[in-house]
Image (cartoon, rainbow, N blue to C red; front, side, top):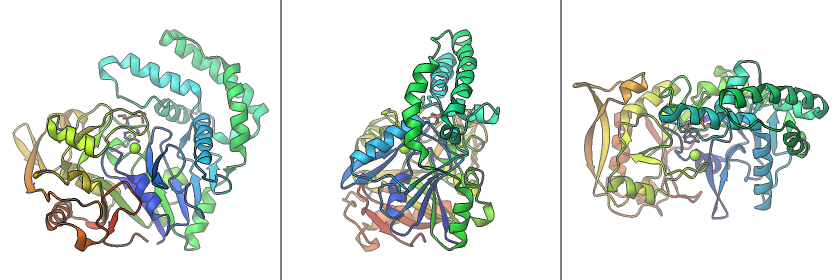
Length: 428
Ligand code: IMP
Ligand code: MG
């Protein structure tokens, strides 16, 4: 089947943007199915990095049809800013971008509520990106949301928005004691945005299904990662969408039977942004080295990412939840200068050893990782383009990961540049 899902197998930031972008030479459609402007996908454009938040990572590649599916929550103001930003970098955004009319909007009050809720949580804060994601998905479920298609008829949108702001202001002022938002000011900002986005609005599910039927190559680009999935992640330290492969069906209208393969993206180590348990986290010099060499800073919020060793227990869980048969390992080059590399192969929970990923964040917070150590390769990998150009110990590391996780290797990314990839098997 010609449809492939690219999902993050960890806590996000696995390099899905770079991989999606690199796969565009073989793809016809790139479709985002969940998340919103909380995502930060860094792609190299003419050698200079560019970060996409809402735009699919195929937007900078000519000839690709990019779709923002109905499962995404769209901050229209942020999207308009992003379109202007990439246009400035010479990327044409026209018919190559379709925005599904059914995708719900993240409106300014969602962002205000996200921030207010986080402040109210105090010590228990999730560490959200403050992009309004949780409140927007909550409104969608509560049947209080506004789909982006509503922007096409602005005169009808206006009173609907004013009514919503009036109600949300009660929450903002009475519940959180914060300043009310001004509907008129926001409408002035939204009006030109609606004009910009209107030409991209479309009914996309049947178009995507038809593309698959016609044998075109469709790439579904996940945002965040499996362990941030609202159902299967480390709840409540998760995002509010279905980040796993199942999210494709509910986020695009493409049935599970039309989904070909699910490819998992995993870094050669692990990172996490925000709060929540992270068994293999390290806080010593190793963490600093990974953070510096891997430029591990949030692409959306600029926060330093927490860093640690590769966690096979978590990876196996992701593989099971998503039905992953092949993985793409990214940022292998970040480990180039480690004498010894650790891999977590099991958890010790209250004196009992297990290779099952716990279903509660509380239990996950109590595990002690059981490590095996492997010798590092201590040489530069970023120029490698073929298996034979990888140091034998780097290959041994990759082979061991695949053996432990019981998956095949699709390819390995060895640097930020688009071409810094060693392909073992092709995606399409
Ligand atoms: P939210 O998605 O902004 O609600 O944030 C919820 C949690 O998901 C926080 O821990 C965030 O740091 C994390 N998160 C959200 N988006 C991303 C992402 O794109 N990469 C990594 N972590 C993310
Ligand atoms: Mg990211």
